[in-house]
Image 1 (cartoon, rainbow, N blue to C red):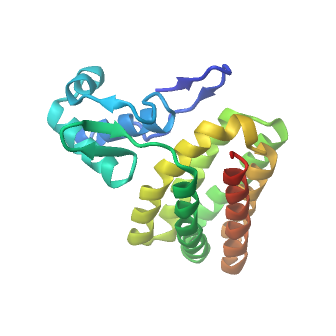
Image 2: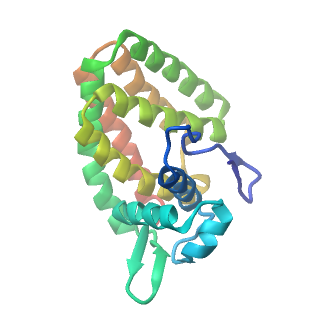
Length: 229
């Protein structure tokens, strides 16, 4: 599923293609998370389980379970007698989220540099080259695709299930905030190159360098966040 916005840019699919092993709840979650992150389901919008089930072609029980998972990640709020609402986007809460993301992402970068396999290091080298290319070309859609690949590769190579769980809870809210504001304030070239710096440090097994590059990336993300005011 791709999303086309008013600028004509088509955002790439932001979730994994459903596999045979995915449950219906997984599939409902993946589709709803994408719809919320890309603002097709808008902040403050009231959601109907029945309507979502019909739209997705999935039963109400998996949709209900997916919404509960989204609620645990802060993307929706379940309110007594009011139903399910897409959560609002709040700058002060986003900055608090980034405090946690800085620490977790630094840990993931450091551990990925220490634990990545040879194939994973090759993958990070390729990611760094691709990120440099999208920076040169100022390719918004290409960057969105590579950013998602980078996040997944980072948590996989880090091999810490608790850090991975925390990152998954953080990333949806972070991506949604980014999607809302990137057209106005994102320095795409700078952001892509900062991602590439982390990827290169991981590829060469430089744990301290990966941690430092991760902090530099987070410094920019905080700067980006504050620039939305």
